Image (cartoon, rainbow, N blue to C red):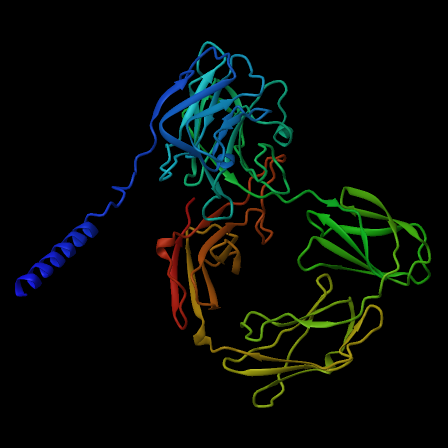
Length: 538
């Protein structure tokens, strides 16, 4: 019996050992493939001359596929009819380029694939594959190199198109709006430098575009542009700097639309500050108007009284040299009613004010119906401000740390353009944090040339705090919300107190901006004072 049990236990032990060994030695798929695909042949060969065909085939040692071709592939010079690339959405051991456009004579063409060619399994990229051929006897071999920066952002966006336009008898600056460039390259997703290769000797205009539509032409409304001031002559041994900026859009009025019984919306593009709206023709007796701006959209609201008794009229919209006339048909819509909405936060920062937004233009504000009481029931002095364009009403007052305030607006505080009043009492509570909940930042400017705009910006480059200095090299930011900021300086060249962007057609570069190195900055912490020295370069 013992012998039998011994045999059984022995068999079980062997079985367990086999299973254990099987687990330890189970196939794992081998080492991960980290090698990029290898080209085994090119037909015609890369850098061929006297190219006459319409198809190119690149063969690899393994199955490959193409990723992000729309972003990565750059054909220089651009073709009017896009080539057909195979495979798309699948895998193959070769890539086929079928040319559908008529090729120019004696021209060097380059297909820059970036890192779009990857193997099928691990997606290891073939690094920056470039196929070049010439329809003439020689391959052009000159280059233009440089780097791209952003006028306002710390780092430029990715996939910036850098282009050369040939300056000949047909060239004009407006060519960037309507024609593709002679040569083009791309900074891709990890570079700020560029190199436009295989170009011929000549004179060129150098342009950079953040090309939203990928059509190699400048769309002022959507694209950023950068340009080198002078034309460049190739060959030239120089690195060129291009600064990308967003132009202020040229003003354009859009057809108006009736939005309320006596309210018409006037959409626009560009800067509205000098926009004027007038009725062309007769108006009702006692006709009066007000204009307000939508707080988010590029729209002005034209309020009027009394109603027109006619079906249609004409409006003239002007903006300095711009003039346009629109025929408008009135619609029978409901009248707008007065409502008041609190838009400020309950926990109010020291540099912010209690603010309300009115739905119709305000005409009269009765300060006697407004009161502010602190937590000890003591009345607090205040002032009032009204922004007639945004139709916002603010109540600035001195806030003491740790205090709680109750703001009360009684019925009849507001009377609107149409004589309506607010009928309800508006009450809001405001808390003022302790100043120890905030940080303070002092910036000492070294080599300062005034005037300067000093800004603390968030990770998206949006301004959160700003100071303007005309003579003092020391700038203080108090009661700063704790978090990480960048600090930058705008060189206010025209001394108007605001950052001014550039204009391509006028040959104006944007005002210069310098960022403090990130390595010198710390996250702002509550109850801490930070002192920085920001050395400005000439």
